[in-house]
Amino acid sequence: MDYHGILINLSLKDKSCFKNMKIIGKKHVFLNWLVLLKVCVREEEIDAAIATLQSQMVERIGPYAMHFYCHFYRADELIVVFKQQVFRVKTDPATWQEVTAYGRSLGIPEKQLDFTPCRVEDETY
Image (tube, rainbow, N blue to C red; front, side, top):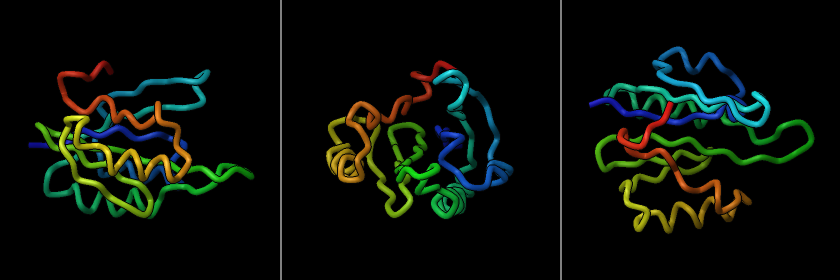
């Protein structure tokens, strides 16, 4: 079974890393400046995709330090990918404490650490 993932266009240095991922949806936010991409990655390619994304995640936008993450999910599995750390948890929010604590330690606001959608049933784009 394939993984679905959510990526942010601005979070990556080199957009060519999307070439091995099937883009299955886009959502434009913040006056179309920010684009959330829903992608599909085959199970046998997920580890390589994670390594590529980690190597391409930006740490600055202009003069501002920025920390991003992306996440992948299938069935009850959730993989949250930060530049320096990968967490494999369940889609149940009760399992997210360590992930959200790590995100907060990077300065990511709590409301952005909800990892939605994390089930195919919750997808809206």
